Image 1 (cartoon, rainbow, N blue to C red):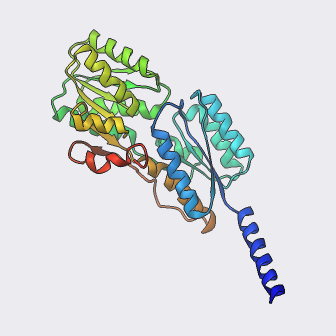
Image 2 (tube, rainbow, N blue to C red):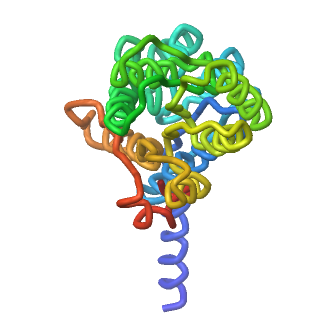
Length: 306
């Protein structure tokens, strides 16, 4: 019995070792400067999905937010021959060649968050994210219904086409010409540049901040200059939830970024293990509104799973 037991244990150990060696490995690469609270939720979604299917996930970003550096991360990921790459696509011109090269090497790629319009032409299997211009249009339409007549859009990443789409959509819904300023990702610069814009044009009565940390900095500028404006945000954070409950912000657009991290891993797992099984279309993760009517129900998840 002891010999049989030892044999069974040895066989189990070999099976476990083989299973570990064959575990799928996915690489997720996103654009960020390390200051945006949005991305840890995306990363958590990806890691939770990898754990659910028994895969491993590597998460990478370049702290500078530089697109050339991000392209190099994509190239390095492809060279390691992972089972799939998940990548945000804020600048298709800068990142496209690296993505095309990965696809040409036989690596399945899914884009997420930004770059919906360019995803297919670069060879990606699909895209997971919200239609950004539509999201901005919905924000602008609601702002107009709530009394805004002249808007200002705060963009923290001038290179990011998705954020430009949000601002453009806002003015599609609101009416009027695009009025967008680059505020950077630095909270002090966001405050300074927002305050300067409001002081330069006192007729502005609506502000859209296309990132949660931008919204949190913008309210400080609005209060410092004593402006009376309708403030709307994109994405969730504990600070934004407090602002909505306190009446400092009218609403935020929720693109459910956990889905943007979670779903690509699940789709790649199905694709790799079930003869190319894929959804029949891209997966829209938003947009949806969070305001005073539903903020309490999602507040505990802000910055964690929402």
